[in-house]
Image (cartoon, rainbow, N blue to C red; front, side, top):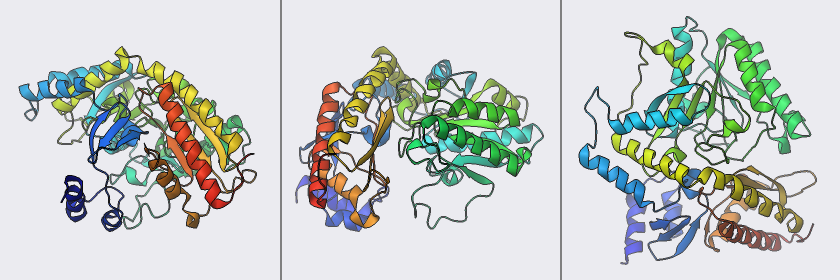
Length: 456
């Protein structure tokens, strides 16, 4: 039995992969076993080279194979691999200091965690405990948005809404969760015909939820600056309005920057595009390029100070929170982002990526919309561009996209008809050309198989 076959058979017997069925995986000869990476490229156990278009889960910001991060982690592990209870380490202190120095507004207090779900879960506990500390324990309701995702732990799993069946079997839901419309101008549920109209209508909908449910019961609004799953970029009015609305009613504003943070949108943090600093911000992924598990919830001084004083601390902990090895890796990762001007590269190459994706509209009638900001872009596929009718699930367009792109060396797929593209910050224009060319060819092939004429 060969090396790859042995690994795949062992995986089929023992490995419970995220969102994968091991029986189907075994039948199709999976999973692909990655063994090495450099930049956007990875090599599998059979020696095949792939472009990891989204850098993991839109998370490997500095690209694969950065030896500097491995060395920083190794040096810390050699000195101290974990801290005694009740202590901290220099790496943990320094990374908290660095994150606070970069965060907008007065976001100065950093609670380190092990990843994105823990970061948003921590944010959720902070906002509810904050109101309780201030004598308003009745403020427990949380507003999030349809079509958003904030993590998979028990509290935040119910924030936002996801594809049908995603939460099946995990009911009942938590109480006090309210859902606002997503400011998606391509499919504005409130009838807005421009990004500005949709932004205003969706922000006003948040205010209505607060008023109708009683401001004295609402703790916070959770929102991604750019909704990652469908790459929804709100109109410019949206975030400033959210900030004003939350201030008006004493509601905390939480920005989920787990995907967007640390340069992905062409700013260090996406909220900077709109000058709206939140009260609490969750980060992960890009803060350490997922070389090791690390994330953080960051609170403003005004929020954090409520927890100061004897016996008033936030009763919350994770074993690996502030892990020194992960902290050292994150610190080195941020250093690379700054030293190599990767945020600027994301802005410049991101603009080129979006422009190249826009060219697909001219040749492909199934391309309904192209949207994006920085290195977060999306191509939405439709069966009828005029009506924006999506493809029926039985047509299996998502799986066809994945298969066609894999045949051209791209690790990239689609979800609910949307090809979301969030490459590492180190991407070049040449990489963009190769990726967009492969998408172009894949769409030609899909349209040909469906009998759809190719020019618009």
